[in-house]
Length: 159
Image (cartoon, rainbow, N blue to C red; front, side, top):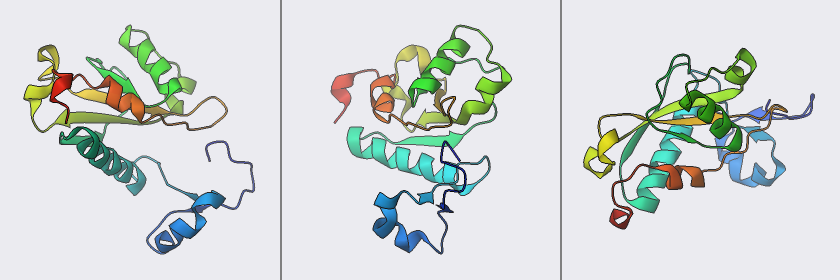
């Protein structure tokens, strides 16, 4: 599980143990399941949507997307350094190998509720968010990349 030592006693967050989260948060013994098709990916998307609404005042929809495969990236934001490296390779039209593809935790598609705030060239294009783990199995998300990488028409419009 993302670089934890084997035999580590980590529980997956669920409805039953969720009330204990705050008392356990500094022990790092509770994990969010980010497996494809599981609730963790949708929960992380919902957190990112609320975070953006709170910080910049724009409503967005973020949804998990299929495999990167033959994606034509019109715009992407790497949510960590490894995701940015992989996104750069795809952006340049390159391919990523199976190991690199398996490092991708999630590929999200972000759309703005009001597309008029997006730069003109991208007003009809989805924005992709990539989250990946490092070769040693660590996940180091940098949510500030999301704020600085959005293709917003006028930064002055940000509240």
